Length: 197
Image (spheres, rainbow, N blue to C red):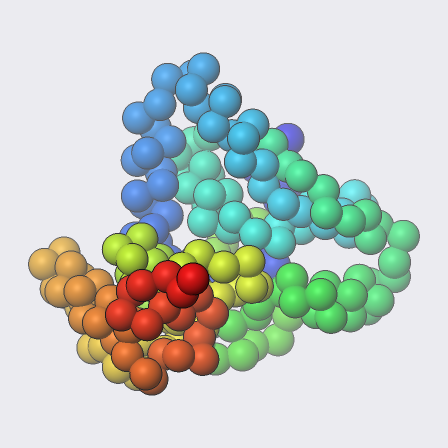
């Protein structure tokens, strides 16, 4: 399907994470890229006018857009195209598929969600949360918008960085904070980075 057909169900992404994904995608040859995208379809629900609404993998969708890659594979979780507008939104809210929070972690109206993935804005702490997870700070979990919970946790604890060196230091600090008792209620928490048996 065309990337232009995808409509986000969140307002922000972490652009450092998006850029890392974009570079990874562009480093692949055509065959490898097709195999990768086929193995990582973008989960969607179908809404009004048969529009595909993204329920996960917003970072991948934005990375494809930024990389000029116009096609992707989608995996339809549910067809809600017969629902009237308000009922559609009630359903995606009830299923925790929508996250209309801005780059400061403030809840906004559903109208704040952009019409296309190209309109997703940067929440730097969302990138920090992803890099901390990848560094072993916490475990990946299927809980909806788990990384945003971690982003919110870091927003009040780690000062904003201005360069790559400071970002790396923020990731290190984030890993230590992820293992602290303060983080124990967050999804994917592991005490001192050890998986529980």
